[in-house]
Image (cartoon, rainbow, N blue to C red):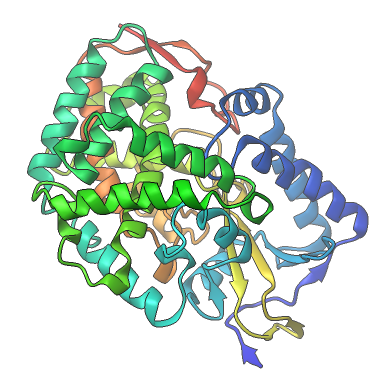
Length: 429
C-alpha cells in the first residue's frame, strides 16, 4: 500500500452525476477527436456551446462534492476526477509512480502509431526514452541548438503563408506540414506527404483507442519510413540527433510522437493569430517584441493554450493501491485532470475568460498549479521550449502585415469562447 501526497479523501458521485459528466464533459471531447481532431464536429461543438456546458457541469460537481477528488462510477472503468489546482499539481508531480502517464486508454490510442513512445513506456525503458527526448529536443534551452536551420524553415513558411489571402486552415496546414517535415525529418522529407498522411490515418484509428483494430502493416511501413530518415541523418534535422541513438530508446517511435505533437502547435499558432488580430494593443506589443526569445509572443502562445488547451484532459493511472486521504484507491485506477476547467476557473482566476498574456510574464500563471498547457511534473512535455521557439517566430512573421480576422468570431469586450475551432478561422490582409 502506498501513501500519496494528496490532501483530500475522494467523494463518490451519484449515478446521475456520473452520467451527467460522461454526457456533457467526456463525450464532447471524445467526439471531436482526442488524437486527431474532426473538423466538422469541432466546429459544431464550438457553435453549440458544448464546452461551456461542460464547464457548468464541472462547477456544479465541485459545488456539490467539494474541491477534492470525485470518484465517478463509470461501468468497468471507474475513475477519479481532479478539479482542484493544488491536487492536480500533486498528482502531476508524482509521476511516473504512483501516477503513471502510461494510462490504459492512452496506451490504446498511441500504440496505433508509436507503441514504444515515451508517454506509454514504463520503468527503465521510460527513463532511457525520456533522456533521449530531452537531449534531442534541448528541453532546458529556450533556443534549440538547431535554431539556425529551424528558424530558416520558419521564415520560409512565414513567407509562403503571407502570400495566401485569405489565409484559411487548409492552406495553412499544407505549408505548416512542409515545414514540420523539414524540421523533424530533414529537407528530403519536405514534400513527403505520405509520411504525414499515413500518420494521420493511424491517428484516426487512435481516436478509438483499444476499440479500433491495429493497422500493423501501415504502422510498420510508417515507422520504417521514419527509420529511413534517421539513417539519412541530416545534421540540420531533429532526426539527425537520433542517428546514433541507442536502439533501446526506439527513436523512430519518439519521432512519431514529435510529428503528432506538431499538429497541436499549428492549432496554437492559428488561434494565437486570431487573438492578436482582435486585440490591437497586444498586436502592437507583439510587433515590438525582442528576438531571439520573443518573450511576449511566447506568452501569447501560452495564453492561447490556457484558453484552449490542445490537451484538455490529462490522464494518469495509479501504479499501486493508494491511500488517498482516508480511502484506498485501487491500482490501475484512471485519474483525470480536467485542464480546460482549471485553466478557466473563475473562482481562482480573475482573468479566467480574458486574453491576458501578461500572466505568463509576471509569474501568475506559473504560480497557479492548475494551469498546465504542457502538462507538469516529471512528464512535462520535453518539447515545450522548441514549440514556443517555432510558434513565436512564425507569429512574428505573420504579424508583419495587418492580419484581420474575417472568419470566426472573437470579441475582446466579451468572454473568450470556451472552444475556438481553428478550422473555421479566416484571415485577410
